[in-house]
Image (cartoon, rainbow, N blue to C red; front, top):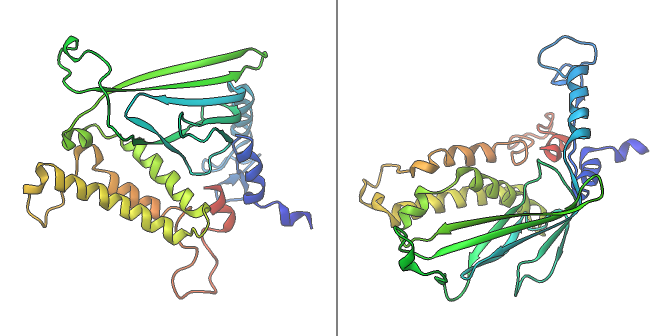
Length: 276
């Protein structure tokens, strides 16, 4: 029966391994496609046409090779999720592994987990010549080699330099909630996909990571002098607990059935979980 192979988990895998994007437009009254309807909460024919036009006219590159280089003291630990789309070339021991992708578009996002190398960050620049900077700098350079629609081979290079610090409060002050939420989400996907992984493990790890960040903030900053019963959050991460709670209750990680219930209609369904 061909309908047995038309589930979203199966169809979406083709889009995933080819670096594409799966669009699910459901027909019906519950946020589906209404080709000739006038309801404001459903997809119309014009909206469907705009989706197809946006996909057809988007700037894309094929035969993509991505590489991230780091200065002394830091190195690439892994890509996130642990099993990224594409092929990893190289063992990553001497230099960071290259990531080969079939295509790339403006919505492509690559998450990389970094770690410290033995020996620490080395100051390769003359510190006395930089006014106002007393700590060494770390540098990152990303390079993307791709082929355009016209067959031209191009490379796009981006370089970023960041100052280091020995003060933990500076780390929390400059934390990026968007980057942290991305790593948390992709880490949850890795917890589901790996051998022995499960939804329960993914939910627990999201909770543990959030608690670890907030506990370290309280232990290594001036927040340790606050009353023990008071919840102290870094200014840049005030929405982190709310995000982690929302992630645990999202359709990707939530239970399909309440505990002790076996006869009710599952929500989310397998298709909804695979799509989100």
